[in-house]
Every structure is written in C-alpha cells, then in structure tokens.
Image (cartoon, rainbow over all chains, first blue to last red; front, side):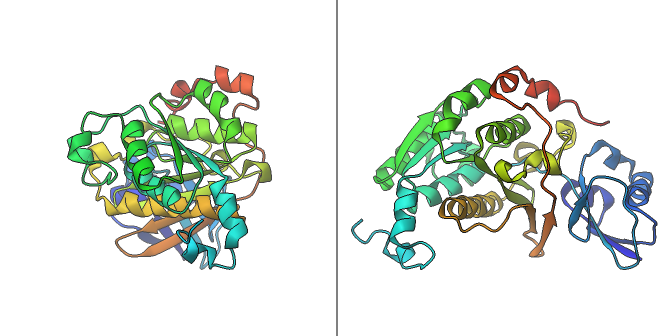
Length: 75
Length: 259
C-alpha cells in the first residue's frame, strides 16, 4: 500500500488530501485519480515519490509516499 | 548604524559584516500585493540598501484587508509608487525605486544585471517563467512564493547551481483551472506568511545562510502540515540568452497547457 498526498486544487477536486492505494507505479496512481476525478486531467502537477520529484513513470513499493503538487498562482 | 540593527547584528551568523552586506544589497521585487507588502516591509526594515518595486497595478478597496502597506487614501494610486512612499518614510536607510510598468523581457534585460536578487511576488505565470529564465541568463538567484486558498508554496532558485522553476514545473498550468485570489478568495494572513517566508529566503541567500538548493516547500496553514519536495539540478529548457529571451512569447507559452 502507498500513501498519496494531494495538494491545493487537486485535493479539493478529489475531496481529500490523502488516499491510500495499492498500485504498481506513479502513472497508475495518476490514471486511477483521473478515472475517479476526470477534472484533474486539466491540471498540471509535479509528482514526487518519497519527497523526490520524479519526471518519468516510477515503480512503487509498499510503504512509498506519493505526492501530487500543482503549481499555485495566488499572490 | 546607531543601534537600529543591533538585535540582528547580535546574531553570530550576521554580525557587522552581514549587516553591511544587506545595506549594500539590491533587490528587484515584482508585485506589491499580498505577498509583496509583507516581503517589502521585512526587507526594508532589516536594512536592505536598495529595493526596486515593479508593479503596474493600482490599489483597490478590496486589496486593503491583506495589502497592509496601503491605506484608504491610496485607492487608485499605483502600488509600486504607494508602497515606495510608505517604505521610504518609515525606513529612510532603504532606497526604494518604483517602476510602474509591466514586468516583461525588455524590462528584465534592462534591470536585472544591476540587482543582487530577484523576487516574484506577482500572481502571474508569465512573470514567474520570465523571471526564472532571466535569472538563469543573468546568473541571479530568485525567490518564489504563491498561495492557493489556505496553502502556500515557496522556494529559492539558484540557476548557477542548476536549479530552476522549470525543473519542477516544466509545463505551465492552464490558467483557467488555477485558483486566483480574485476568483476563489484569500485570507490575508496566508499571503502575509508566504511573503515573510520569501523575505527570509532572500535574507538567507544574501547572507550566505540558505540551505535550500533543490527544495520546494509547501505548507497547509489549516493543518500545519508541511511538505518538502526535493529535485535534481539539471539544465533547464527555455531561452538561453538575452536575444532569445526577447523573442520568447510568454503569453503563448503560458497558454500552451495540457487539456
């Protein structure tokens, strides 16, 4: 199982800032959330595994923490 | 100085040398809104020698609850000019210059080389990517912060070490689906907090105290939960020299979102 942290608009759209999934990689996490919450397909966001930014699909292991962080723009 | 800065000079990490460094430093700040008002006051109060404030916008009544450099008498006045007046009166050691124009590539090229650090206090993606690119071209570090309702992000970028905003967010978000203060609302303490954290990064960077290369920070002010995202240094995309910066169409780039 892996903990998925969501920030900002992503958390609002998905209705929580925290989900637990059992999925094989980061693409699967994004696909699962997009399937459940299609509106997030319109957002761009950075993906991190265990607090490190990943720029390609990354394999996940039990206990990993995934974070999806959109850029903010308010000032 | 005559004791004005005594309490910060007392810090071993600053001392007289650090204070002199601040007094001889020059910052270019884009945006005198919710972030900028707090940041500017912090920088001016602690002895920043020179601050250039770039803002084309004017003070409106609904700004006053969070943009605390402004009073009702400032409504309708340019924010760069109104904030400069406030800071100059209160902090005479700080030389403040208002620029009432839009921050674009031409302005960046004209002003950046002369500054020690750049700060984006705007709510504008084009400004953010332009500052990231211009900072890289000029070898300047820059400080970012932005808010979304009760949450904030902030970071220092040192392009000479391979760190840039484009490393974390290579594709600009679709502005149609981003939260903005004017559409989703904002509680003044949140951008004030972000502006103070930005000011802290500026001072740390100028004093050689920062330890934040490769990190972007996030705070949810409701839960107090913080998060640090680490990223690798790498060459960033985007214009590589002054000439290509002038040619780069940030308006198009920032609308080139993924749908």
